[in-house]
Image (tube, rainbow, N blue to C red; front, side, top):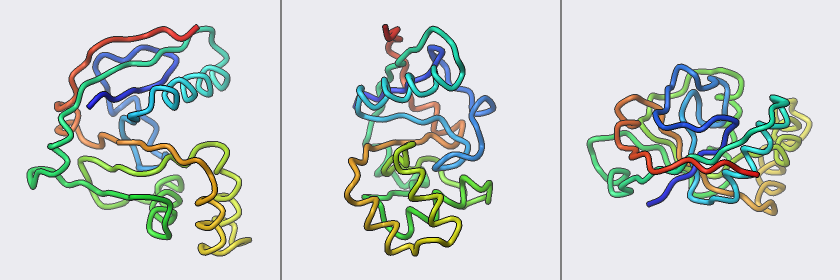
Length: 161
């Protein structure tokens, strides 16, 4: 399968040490199967960093690895209570179980307000999940260990204009 990573730099060799620790699925290298989502993320990062350039790095990945007993994979099919609690805990920096890969919906900036209301106990988990279900949720696959990253095959970098 093709995977895409959007950023303000092209990435040939992902480095977990350069990845932020308080993100949806923890400190990891994030990819998506949707080119437009990767491009959108690159634009968000460009605005935040106030830089000119943005890129989408393209990789190949054998998705059968996710079915292998050799790796620990955490899967979230959609926005559920379990997914919401996992994302909130990671964003708070609370260490979760060690996984090689995590796959599930992206809690993008448009969903942040709902997650924030949930974190502040203003809305319940049920209300938060219902609000999230009506959003267009893109997928993400995080590579959380060096061992997992060894399965990514770099293909090319596209500069976004």
